[in-house]
Length: 309
Image (cartoon, rainbow, N blue to C red; front, side):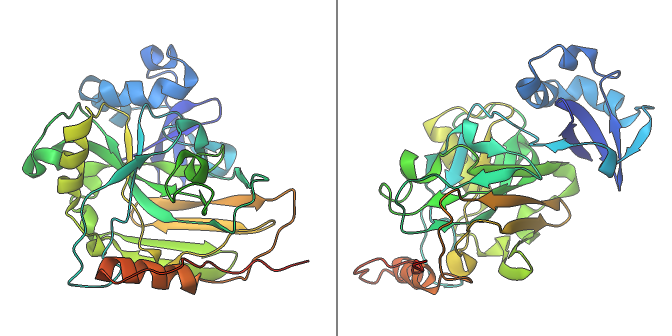
């Protein structure tokens, strides 16, 4: 099942290329503040699921509605930090997360605004994100996936080297968390390790990596996060990225993410300063992360070069 927020943050059921607005089916959810309706639906899913599945609301084309971020203001937005083996089979990766501001979240078709901060480069990171369905505190890895409500696509946009890599000032600018296009419930993706993440910038395929490359089983990552803070319904855990396809984003570009069978969406990039970087994959960053997962000395971290106008 695919659940979305559309128009004025109305819960909706997506069926192929059509959608049913659930305002009439879920009056108690519609009474909640718009940004928190999906979290409310998730929290009461056990009693509301049958009502959603049997909705007789009129079918509309997806083109007739505006898709919003499915969880527009998660109470916690956790992002995996150096989560992947980067294709190095023997790599040893420890679970780690950082917090990203919930106000960074935007939805499909929205615009990523590059701030005027003097970052050496701004990067895209296409990620699988999971949405918590029931409270999880000090849970075991074996039961962790039972606490997942579903999965969505997430773009962890980054301003490099403004802080210390995953600092607030690197990750949390408004519009730096595109999410969507909806939530695919967990029963439709029984093993998230089987999924594949892809990203294009304009027509160039940059990222295309399997979730099987993740350094720790997803259940272990959820359990680790729950050992630090209780995870509540509607919390979002973005699982990190394989950096081997990461590259710069710049003014006028279209960034598209796709994870099947979830789906995909695109956003635009706007930079009022009109800055330019080398296009394509940032091979310097990719090489740096490979050295990190191999345990090799780093030296100076380099990024794609800025092009003077």
